[in-house]
Amino acid sequence: MQIDETLLQRLEKLSFLEIPQEHREEMIAQLSEIVSFVDNLSELNTEGVDATFAMSDSATRLREDVGSVDRAINDDILSHAPHAQEHFFIVPKIIE
Image 1 (spheres, helix red, strand yellow):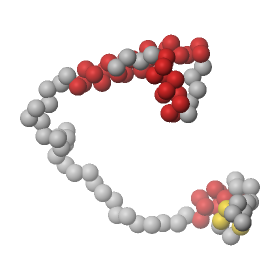
Image 2: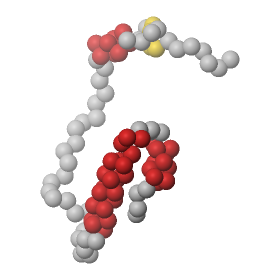
Image 3: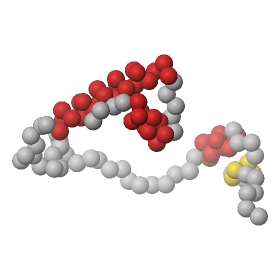
Image 4: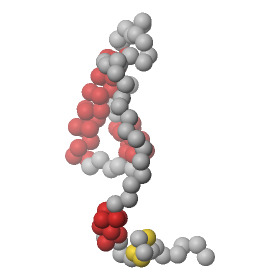
């Protein structure tokens, strides 16, 4: 895949980013390196490798899913809100 100005403009539009003119050539070069690296990975022979292959046979440890409430965190977050009341954000009414 060739990275050019047209593709860079399309990526800008899709990502809602604007790349300054002075950085465009550098960005095209960096994206080209990334695509080249990924193309190299596609050349690897993975035949016979299990799709669920992992470096470790041990499973990920899971923690118990327990809900918790820390009022200090809640109060700290609400202290930055323009309007808050009874542990809730107060926002303008937008639907009549």
